[in-house]
Length: 515
Image 1 (cartoon, rainbow, N blue to C red):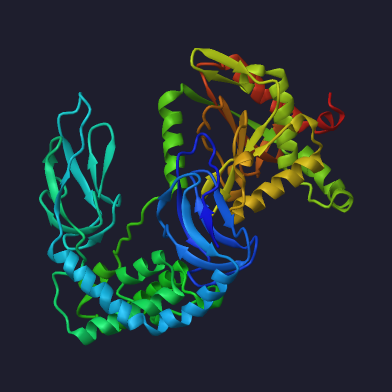
Image 2: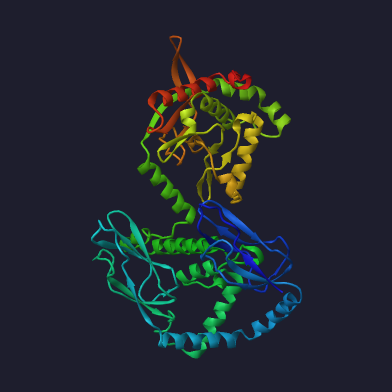
């Protein structure tokens, strides 16, 4: 019996997702609850696991495909079907040459009778009369898939993406980058059903060798990796795989290409004393990569914050010596008692929570023409991950002790690093704390995290000469930066909030005693 592998339910604010990585391939045996595929949304990476023991019968949605909730992306053969599927794997492999030849013939037939479809400029807004071809992402003669982004068209307001109307080949580009075009102008031609190699002739033996090589690549590399190999003119056998079972990963390909470039550069430098100009030109290579959905979402939200709010930043500075002395005195006992380190973030969160109680405007947000005051304290903590900046939420911080906060932040940071944050952990939050000090930032103006109305930036602790009671002392000082939405928070409240945070951090006993 075949079991559907489906995309899990997505939250209301997420319309679709992208297949990020398949960890199995057709014919592989899988066990119940084994992770089969990672699906990436603009917020988190979701794992889809096997519902039962069996064999992967089919992968319907390849890596990079956009999918919706409950969409079937693959199938698992269970029971007898799994057994027969496993047995048939050997037969299918022995017939790979025949199937490859059939596929080649089929592709050749399709390319000979492919329908030509116009690639047109989409409708432009009423206030926009024309647009400019910004970037072609494919070249004439290259294979394209349905809904693949072909070209970016730029207006004075937005950048529009024009996608392929069908699978096939981009047969012709009618307007080059920089050309001015109008709505419904034909800017290219896609030949539906054609293959990229249809315009080239080759020996039958060459085709067989190439198809055999492709089959070998498919065994040790996923679709996204095979595309990357093709871009650099490589085969999977050229690259040493470090993935599970010797599979080749994107990182393996990039490392191999980088090594080739370095070898080429060193070889050319040895013989380029008379040809310095070409060698210098080789060092100016560029690489264009598509933005991930998370990076796109980050860009959209940051731009939204700049355009839709009256953002302003106020500053102050803190003497961190009292907290540093307290940590030095109790950090070993604290870690032994609670099993976690006593860091600075616990104090920051406690101080912010108390300040939010005293200044409810900072713990509010705008919804249309209304102001919504939140009587709970959910604080977003900015966490840097390999995929970008995320802001998971610590909930009900007014009920948490220092150890609870430190443990909570540590768990969120680990999940963020590993891509394991859940949708629930990413949603909500009334206020954000970001700590650029861990990267060495001395001062910054953080950007709001909509729909929140304020964000607090912590920075590098640095010893500076300060005047204390008429004398100069060297103290560990840190700048604070509070960015806020001036539509809802006035200067009096913003400055009062920041001063409260400063006073609490400079006298940490008050945080512990709740006074």
